Every structure is written in C-alpha cells, then in structure tokens.
Amino acid sequence: MFKHLIWLIFLMGFSSDSTFLATTLHYDIIMKDKIIGSLDTHQKTKGNVTTYQSFTSIKTKLLTTIEVDYKYDVTFSKVMLKKAKVSIVVNSRENAETSTLWKNTQYQIIKNKKESTLQDSIQYTTVLMYFKEPKNIKKCYSEQDGTMNTIVSLGNHKYKKINANGKENMYFYKNGILHEADIDGGLVSFAIRIRD
Image (tube, rainbow, N blue to C red; front, side, top):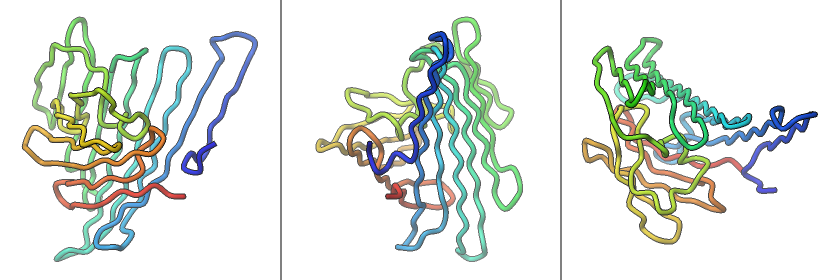
C-alpha cells in the first residue's frame, strides 16, 4: 500500500467481533544529522476499542552520555480517550510518569503523583498525530504533560503544535501519515523521520 506502512493486517473471523486491524510505523530519531535513536508506534483496533503504544529510545552525548526512553500506552473507545499512561526513563531511572483515566464525567490526571482533573472529553491526542493528520483539529491532549495543546495548520500538510509552556513542535504529513517532525523534547531536541 504505502512504503511507510510496515505492516497492515486484517484478520477476519466468523463474527464482526473478531475483526482486528493493526498498523506499525517506524521512525529514526535524528540530531545534528546523526541517528541517535528510534521510535516505534503501534495502533491496534478491535471492535470499538483502539489501543496505541509508542516506544522511543534515544542515546546521545551532550556533556555526558544520556539515554532517554519514552513509553506511551493509550486506549480509545470509539473516538474518545479512555486512558493513557506515559513513562519517561532517563539513564535507567524513572524521570516522569503521567496517567490519564476517564472516570464518571471527567478525566483524572496524575502527573508525578500530583492530581488534577479535566472535564472535557478528549478525542485527539499526541499519539494520534502519527496515524491521523490533524485536519480541522485545533486542540490536542498531551498524554505526557496532562495538558491541552494548540494545533495550528500552516498549509501544505504542515502543522505546529504549541504546548502549555509555549514550546513548539512542527509536523509534516504525506497521505495522512506523519512523515517527519521537529520536536522539542525538553531534555533534548531532535527530528523524527519515517523509515522507507
């Protein structure tokens, strides 16, 4: 289908409940024209439930060697976020963890053991940005920060995402799939490029 879709599987069973769809995308993490890591992200849909997992591993040397691993686990029911968990490990030590859970009529957000809530239902999050171009999307929930971000369309399938602290990331799409991005990762800034 597309070169950038590593695999696309349809498993059909005896009933519609067994329909299963999975997509995986692979990216290189680049800093100063050097590959310093990888990002693998997975989307699986069964019935009305879609789960996303994303694993990012970065190893680079600034003043000292730094290894950063990001892990995302996100679940949607139909088009609504039900739960998300993000953990960040730096040099083999837990650096940050954020969880989001829909309970009753609001989200319970726990970021590094501090709790907050969000009333509005969430239909678009950072992990979706790999798989679904944010056409006509103005807001994006950050599973990592537990905050709403702003998305600005720049035309020609380019978008700017501005987080709650004013940091900006740039995203570039082809055929509805993220092909490259420039990311301010906090500890390090880097580019993401899809593998051919």
